Image 1 (cartoon, rainbow, N blue to C red):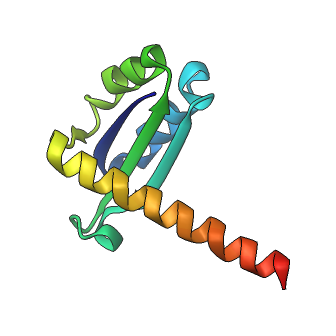
Image 2: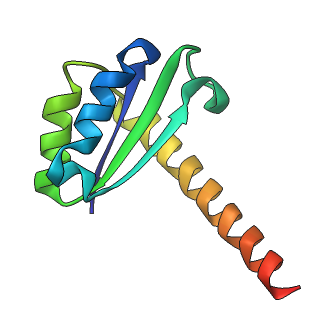
Amino acid sequence: MAWIIFEVPNDRRTQLDEVLREDVIARQSHKLRDAATLGGRSGHLLVQIEGSTEAVSKAEGMLKDIGTKLPPKEAEALRARLQEEDEAASAGMGLFFTE
């Protein structure tokens, strides 16, 4: 599955929301986090789009005008961290429902 991570300034949130509502992109998996909470720059958002190659390519084309694509090494580390968060949240919910 293809994926990308972009950093987008908070003042471009409206444009980001428009990209995320685009039909093909809206049907993909996306995560949005405050960059500062993940060690990034304050005043920025991190957005990960994951899904079909076509949709990720389209998202990349649309996001390049409003944000900055993270370098591969930084993006890989961030993606791993986001996956760890998801797994920890899932494990926590599992504990909640089993007790």
